Amino acid sequence: MSDTDHTAAASEAVHVHLNFTMRGTVPLRLVDLLFRSTHLLVVEYGHLTPLDLTAGSPSRRAAAFADQITSKGLTAALDAAETVTKLAYDSLDAVRVYDGGWIGRVAVAIEPSTGATTVVRVHAPVDIDQFVAAVRSVLSSYAVAVERRDGLALEFNGLLGRLSRD
Image (tube, rainbow, N blue to C red):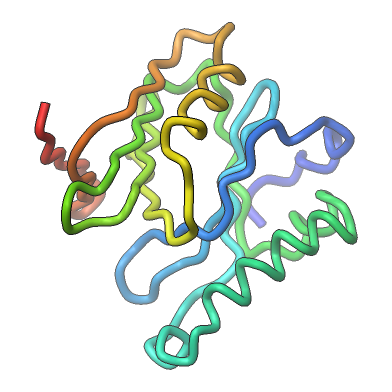
């Protein structure tokens, strides 16, 4: 686990939980986004092989992680995760939600003030407008742009390339 101070604020609520997203190429990584009052947790809890994808295990593993938060608590779920990255809202420039256009998946791009952008592709059903509104509500007291965009969010070797219809 990369972030060791998550247990100190385990009682703090998760205001928005985006479950069953993936990032990377090979191997794909299962990731959940947990928006809390002062920071975002990017929680990576599984690597996926081609066999996992053909057997349908990603959706079961994502459901199991969400269930672990509910049944055993956030601290236990974070302790079981492979990595947890804490991003303070003060260090973010933007959260952009792309609708995927006609051919892609919904994607969320988390753009820090410095460093690489994190892009996750959403594999669960999500109401984009409701998600954007919820994230805006959590980040309302911070200088972070929360935007809904048409089109694709593509990541090439850590660089975000934006293909948008705006």
